[in-house]
Image (cartoon, rainbow, N blue to C red; front, top):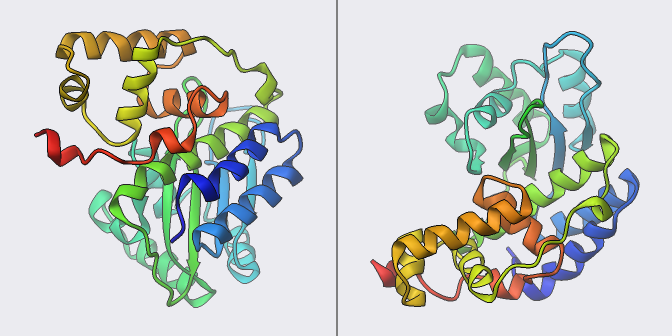
Length: 259
């Protein structure tokens, strides 16, 4: 699985410039193939509110499976979507049975997917406050394995969040050029880079030789400047506007080294 700053930075830069769904599709398709995935899906999940807009959906799944999924109207019962709606972090599809209560229908959905060309996958949840949930998923052909190192998962999560945010923004009338570009202090950028590498706040404080409370405040202030409340969206925004690059957030310090 090729996930490194040199190979992904150009895709990330192009994604930030996307102004049409076709550009997002082409970019994510190329990015998926570069990472070793066969398929992808960027979707907003089914919402039951009255007068709801049609959910955003950009899908590159096997045609047989996509057609069957729509024909059987599995949007509201998809176990991957249900698991995603209850998670903040990404997960492999093989983990779903331990994340949610599974029914016979859920196992049948996985069986149908396998029989129609879609095997293992990885989903990054996307929760937009005040709106309905969504996700970005990468999938493999039936019988193929996902080969990804543990320390590459944070980068995959950031990519999924950035992809969904770009598509969601375009679909609902926004755009990458409408994102604010606040300036962070050097120490705030240090903290963002380190938590993007997988370090906890306490580990960050030790790595930077600052107090735990100071590290918390740096991260909180950075999030406030970007108008977000979670760490992953903060890292995505900082990457998108060029304040940090993938080289800055690729794991170089092992979290285990700092206790």
